[in-house]
Image 1 (tube, helix red, strand yellow):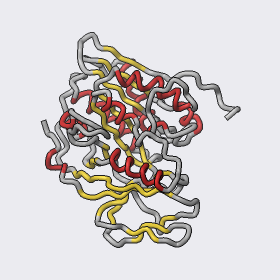
Image 2 (spheres, one colour):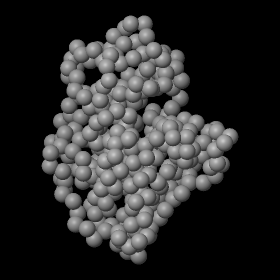
Image 3 (cartoon, one colour):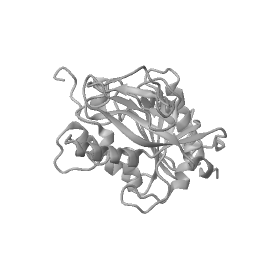
Image 4 (cartoon, helix red, strand yellow):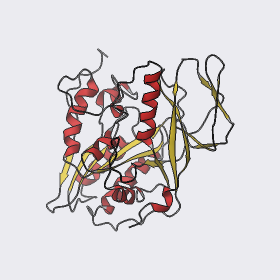
Length: 322
């Protein structure tokens, strides 16, 4: 790291309309090796500055590279995973703590967040949405319908729920086996935004190197601007063909020699009884029900997420189309 240029700031671009309206923030490269959002945001900045795109209402904040250290290193994180422990701290211990000290107050001033990501293995783009309206302790939400309406207009037809609940159980599992589980229940950008009273969606735009992913990200930004009435373009209709699935379990990698039995794709269907992988001691990992494998990561670090299991959700029928 000593050969890398010193990082002392984060580039934040804001475009304030002369007319009142929503405050939208779009993030790229929260994980440094996920650059589709960076490319899409930089394209949009050029088009706004050249007059191709006009922000007619509200305020648009664009952060092309949210984690510049991870981006510079061309890897998922710098010192740690920014998107698993998002909070303000008076005594920052690592680079991501400093980023969070800038990002959290910024998110608190916004109404809507679109966070652009990509994933390890080939697969179909999808949107991660928050829980239904609830007053629980883990992730209370009061604006689920508005979030669903936004998600339906991003241009993708697959939606995933259950993230924080599943991750929280994963943290408890780590604690039970004595592993480091100090992370604040997987709270990242979107969870922080909801805690501040806003709405937020994570869009997973495709595989990291998929050449189509930046266009997926770019179109999602334009669709969101139109949906919120921030540009003159007609508001997009909600996507018609769609499916919703629910994450219900996360499996950590416990040893460097834990391995999948084959190359899995994210959202590949699995049947109850299917072999998924093997522990280093020969123990087998078997699907406990029909569903999907999500985010399989063959290079996962020990005591980190290796893959998720998901099942069909009935939420598709209640997703808002207004």
